Length: 109
Image (cartoon, rainbow, N blue to C red):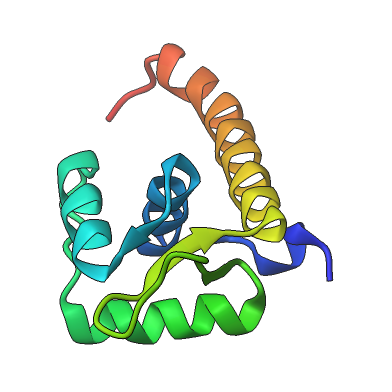
């Protein structure tokens, strides 16, 4: 499967993948990193987060990091996960480039 096949991503998924692109983290670390990074108000509750992480593992976007232990599972992004993030960022940048000219024309609103 190609990374573009997974697009568009939910904001929550994009933020989780981008914080994992910085460094492997455990669940609580992911929640705190997303909260501190998100100015758009994306909040994660633990029950939902673990469902999302399971789905991301099944899709091959993340894996359990080598330093995981029984009490704390640490998650790391995979090469496919990085490609998915890259494809989504490129998609969003294209969308913004296409939308910006309409704002500069200053039509009635």
